[in-house]
Length: 306
Ligand code: AHR
Image 1 (cartoon, rainbow, N blue to C red):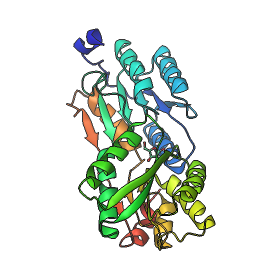
Image 2: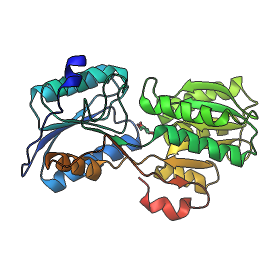
Image 3: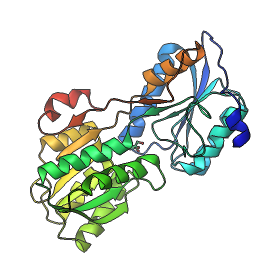
Image 4: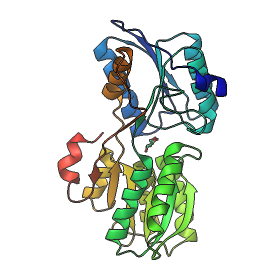
């Protein structure tokens, strides 16, 4: 680590076309599909060759996908790491091999691999702020009083870590808001539903749900309705992503609000790479500007959601 830290980032030549890797973590929810489509569409528009890999939810497979991209000597690598720690070593390996790497959406372990030093840049949303924004809305809409079930994202992933911390740091100032149970639903609708089926049985006193993504919130709504609860009436839900079906759930009065986490990375990611090749100074952290959806704007924003 120390040896790599002292070396400069790999250079990138200006070329009419590039061959780049995009290492996806999984393809099991609308957010991942939208992110992949955005990368593929932009590569196509630019006439670049995109080598796409799907780790199918396995951090170990994703690490070997990145290693295979290094072995193929692609021009650059775009990595959306499933979990922080298991994907950190391959970031350092890409640098050692002289291949510029961009971390997009989820992050690696920055205590070991730093943007601007070990990889070109981190491009993505501020997950901590997302957790805070969800908490802020919940505090306001429940008058600072609720018993919350938290559906966590995939364990060890940067959004799950920061969305949990952002939310908990915010509610620490509001003793009337208590998280009474928390369990992972792995960012999927089906697991969100199953986990909520069990948790609402164990905690019928719950009055709110904070889900780390929309898919789990939508699964939770199904489970709550099956348990005889009335989402949006006797239980308040807030989540993150801003996908179309979540905005529809807001319009239907079931989901209270969702914080946007924009999955459309294609244009920004490849433009940053072109700027890097052109020798422009790249900020180590390029943070997306995300919107917020609730009953006030869900209808108007529906057509712009993924
Ligand atoms: O990393 C972003 C998160 O990953 C999104 O919130 C979620 O839907 C996706 O799987």
